Length: 526
Image (cartoon, rainbow, N blue to C red):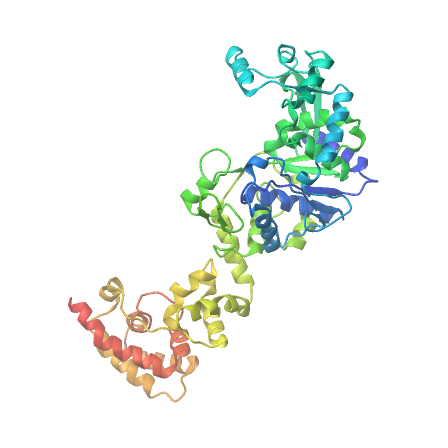
């Protein structure tokens, strides 16, 4: 499909929808935690809806009762609340198209199942699991379709009285969609252009199961999208093979005029190697694949989340938006509002998007730099207090100002700058042997005397006085400052020395210097 053809499809879609309100949906299954790929799908739906002045619907697809996990629905809702992605209607939000939970729509689905049967677009099938297994063993690559359906136990191969009696007797059955062979099915996709599939490769999909009186996803999503007037279906690439079936279902119901426009997003791929991003990749490489921490109620396993790992929700949203979509400019930092303005679904990639988790870390660092010292200090102050330090907010903010450009996460501040609040109890031996010279004791003693005599202990005053002393004594700046840093910090890293001593104040600076003069020589001798 050429780029021109793709844009033609998009233009045609826009014209088709000109008099129709844009309505999109996100419809997860409550079978566990929300995968980060699902978050991106929801985000793209949100951006599209907001840009078009449309509605964003939240639906729960819980037809698979065997896989239902308690707490999953609440987890999903909390995830979007944290991310700042808001729905206009749906489960827990209300609206005029409910109910929005599939398990509460059984009677609706039954009506449409019967309609398909009456139209001879679907049929009852009574094949047991054992019979299906036997057929699979008998026929290589067996598929329940036009070529095999007349060999099976279904309403097409039985007299009406026979299959009606089976239903009356309570025999379990499914309803299968009747795919007619020899057709070309055309799927118009806003990202991929026109996708053409031969109907011969499609099987007679199960649409309904009598055992739980619930439809499968294929029927439920078609009926729900139609009744809820969904105008665009934006979903992951994994649903592209099902799209021809869905087109045929719209045709069977006579709903082609209101069929939504499709867009199938590229998959999120492993950071390294091939294949779809999985939880195992996160476990192996040390990054979350869920928005929030998830405590599995069945296994007790705890999976890390972006929130608990210290990511800002804005950083996660910004990161995800650029996975498989490009604004066509060099801009990387976007607010949610800016993303709404810039989003163009036609600029989504057809190819899978490699999940560069290191880029996610970079985004978090950039958002730390963007936030005010007060915002970061508000998050850091509880960490300081948790470590037994009673410090004022203004003092915490001072440290944040000096150190926030050195970290990717707020939680990294404490191990990096605890020396501002707590005097070192030990000295890094590697730094001791490298930075503490034979004349360091003399130099630090002179420096301590110099600083003790200062009446003005401001950074400017310290710097002027010490530089004058260095020049007079012809001491090497590096030797003095390296030893000074070791004495105050305990290691060979940190911000400017006058920033450190200025923060500590005269008394604490001198205490640390005197201690170092006494202790470090004993370490050198070891």
